[in-house]
Amino acid sequence: MPKAECGFSVLFNVEKLASVILKMDPSKEDYPTEIHDYLVAFETAVGSVDAVLKTMMSISRSELLQKLDPLEQAKVDLVSAYTLNSMFWVYLATQGINPKEHPVKQELERIRTYMNKVREIEEKKKAARLDKGAASRFLRNALYEPKTQSKAAKKSPIPAKKKKSH
Image 1 (cartoon, one colour):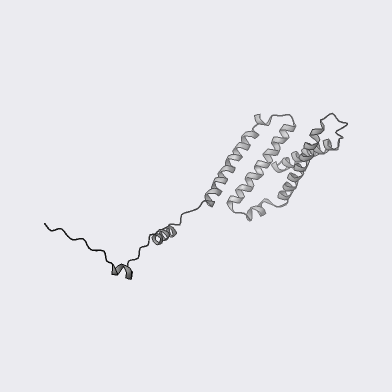
Image 2 (cartoon, rainbow, N blue to C red; image 1 turned 135 degrees about the vertical axis):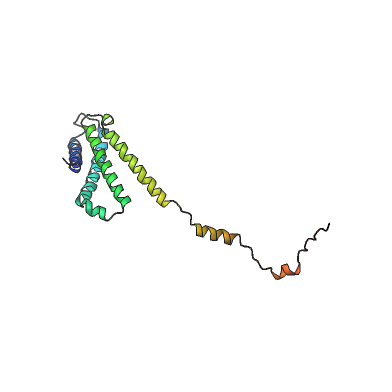
């Protein structure tokens, strides 16, 4: 099964499970009523993830990537991979398998590493750059001293030092 279909399958199964539990009457069932509020919030979150994934999957990948620069393309690929692996993590947890002991944990860490590298590249692009020409003009104008003397300076000249004779 392709990775995208696996992600939708996991999402569908989790959403179906949440819907079944929510249809149960908490007063008649064997689970605490406090869980019901969490399940409602969970079902809402799963529904919004489902909507975003359907939107992403409705556009062909090549169409989407043509509109983006290489850095944005990398971000889309990383977010897609992270999302699918996160859904697999949830699937493992729902099946009673400890995802921390599964290779999916290393895959998520690897993706996070690349996400951090992309973030560093973005920060370097946004960092202020020194315009050497502008800096030298600024310093030259800030330290500017006029070469010509004003009239007031000509009226009260500073006496010249006398040379010492031996």
